[in-house]
Amino acid sequence: MIHARLETFEIADCPPYMALSYEWKEPNSEEDPFIQLHGRPFTVRNNLLRALCTILEHQRRQEKHPDAYVWVDALCIDQRSIGERNHQVRLMREIYTRASLVVSWLGFG
Image 1 (tube, rainbow, N blue to C red):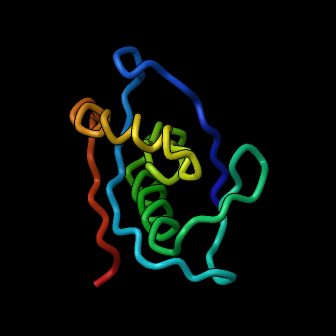
Image 2: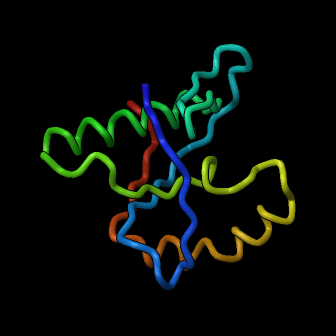
């Protein structure tokens, strides 16, 4: 189970973070898994869960801090708010440019 929390930063003052770009794929309705976000279930798509699990496992094997900041659009943008989505889309170039690492996840073969 992945446990996460959201923190808000001004983009110019945020700590180092990884930006995750991934293929959304079609939702699986009732089959979609969830993570714990602030202690509550939060539905994510299978491909995102696989990406997060793979990243966390890689960090553990490399003995890197597992609590590193990761920017993920499905978690960091309120997908129900058109205004929020539009605002964040305008920031995407800067979000990915400022990331200390960008991971592009296409899934397993």
